[in-house]
Image 1 (cartoon, helix red, strand yellow):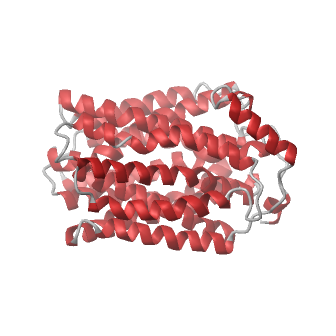
Image 2: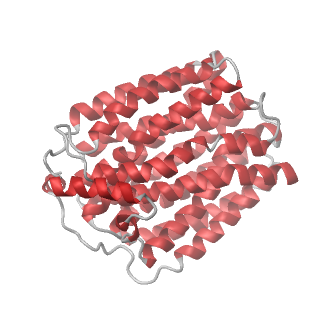
Length: 410
């Protein structure tokens, strides 16, 4: 598990950067865009890149063969670029330069996000992946806490400081992962590389590789992932504005409130992985979806800041039950040879949800006010539960459970 903790620094940097992005970029956009729907649309820039690039890069990394390994080249290229552009975001000189820096930052992060996540199942036996996912999400949650808590204090001092800190963390995390996570080389045949080039020419959506992964269980599971991310991404994108405009909080207090969600997500990340290993990933996910539905429904009626933060803390526990077990379950329903492909599919669906959710919920907010935010989020969780209940039998039986030598040694 030592390698898993070290790999967690990659997810730590991603989570910290995205948390800062979601907490503070809406404040940069608000002077230029006067309605929530347009702010929500602009907050989905990253997901357009994620939707089209991450599945392709994840599948291509399955067949990449270099002296650094198959995933590491994408980190070495993407992470320094991401650090540069995230540092430039607060120094925009107008709306066009703000959008330019956001686009380049998100493009850079899309290059390495799927390979970073795919490294976890690469170096971890299938039976230990849920716990390992708990570890890397624990690290990611620490990043989010630092973003919402420490980032709020830095933002009050100077709005550029959180973004400069995120750039530094990204570079340090790259050094740690590159120094301590060693991939096998020469693991992809020339025939496999030729096939990858041929598949690329065929186009992503027509790829036989992707179609072969879409059995009924996987489709229902990915549909559930889509709907619970509709809920989560909408709340994450608009919560700081919800706190400011609906509850009357100042910007720092609104962003700090999200620390409670992230803190309890972190505290329950590893236990939820252990629960998934013991009681089954699907069962723990179902419990998490039901619990988070009740939390979001209750938030709609809360005006007290103390009660709000208590509910957010409880929501973090239930989100851990969902998020820690979902990616390992998606991977477990396929073959070991398709880890990168299924990682790409997971992020394709979650990115599609993140594209749809902020503009959709933003438009509903424009029509009905910020009070509608958590009603809509609750509805998305109901739809996710309906998809999960369509999965019959044992959803966690992998089609090909052969482990790589590297994974077996971890």
